[in-house]
Length: 368
Image (tube, rainbow, N blue to C red; front, top):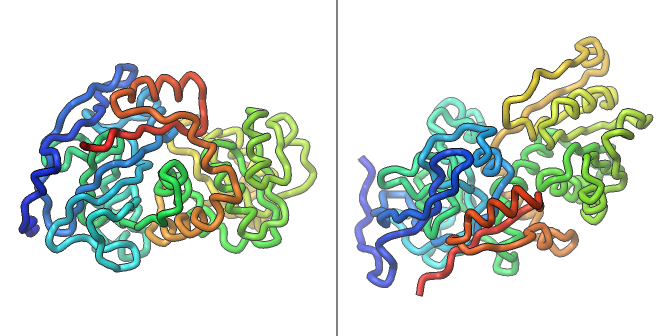
């Protein structure tokens, strides 16, 4: 039985928390109140400073992927610790956390005891729970970013954020940035290699910059949107390829990151891989048509096809290090097109769907 927190919350802190709750695809989110939870050992209560709306959130809202309901969506979050259990959680470096620390955290909650966790895949823990993807019920209801507070459960990898890192830049770290860090970890050394990236969304733009910083001699990107291709050049892309031109390219690639989820892109990725190429599939998180691959070509070229879904604590560390070093070098701060108040969440969603910016943010008002 987990140990309960020994001290009571400060009377200055509100005892009820507002959240925008998702009930059904195609319907507006409803603003609802939840009681502030009492903490168990290893937990923390975090006041949300900012959350960004991820593409997967929009897929859920449109009904393109199914999540349990009712739920509090959004998992790209930056927050400030306002309450700690006794004993409290430690950060990713093993150091104790404190009240007031500005933090981000892993999307996945892992047990670190099952066979998958012990084999180095805590992101695929047999008891995994994901923030922004859980039922908003009971003491653990506050589990998504579209809220004033979030309960960080025991088993969450938590990381402090450098003070100079803006919330808008830091918010996607625990989703897109960490996922790309995992993809490059699986790709291995990319220095002096030729990289091709499909999809110039948040994943793809981050992949361009991280590939450039990792010493690749070529970082090409392919997308259907000319404006996003132009934006990718500001993140270090050496080549911006349209969908029509990608099939005509004569230069094979050593590493291909598929971030769009398009079956056509997956098929093309395998065709343009050189001997020994690694094809890393990142974007296929929804059902799609089956892909058609030539097994003879895969065998003869010693092609590796690797799927990446979620990430390990080491990838969260790498993501924070990369953004901390490079956020001034690339225009990450410009990727959040607009910021809305929590009470305007439905307007934020409508804006995201209509205008298709890279990111839109929601910032709850600070308590008085």
